[in-house]
Length: 161
Image (cartoon, rainbow, N blue to C red; front, side):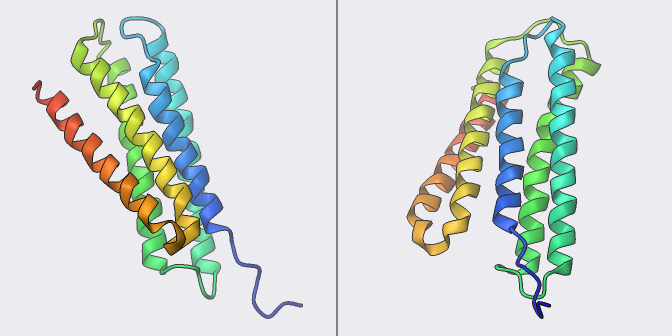
């Protein structure tokens, strides 16, 4: 009998969550506005979002059942919550495309989707680096800067600059 239970694999769960985010970023770029792919995209995004929610619940259960987690409990919960928010927002975008039956696309939407894909890919890479801690801190800083750059570009696309 073990006194301390086997340590849950938080970083594995974070990576699974990051994979869902990255898949959502790819999925939103594949939508062809005005076609049946909008419905398929919205459905796929909903599936990814539900999977992400389940992963978040698992993380929450693990952190509550772990005596000494590898990082602060609050940080684990905040990271999971923030990653889940990313996929929630992407899923909302797909749902709104379907709800409002958007028929035409423009360059701003296309640019926005490409930037979203880039940001989700970079976010997933950043999450994968977390498991290495300080050994990969420079790489994590570079990825964080890239995410902020992409966010800045996205804001310009949204306001039509």
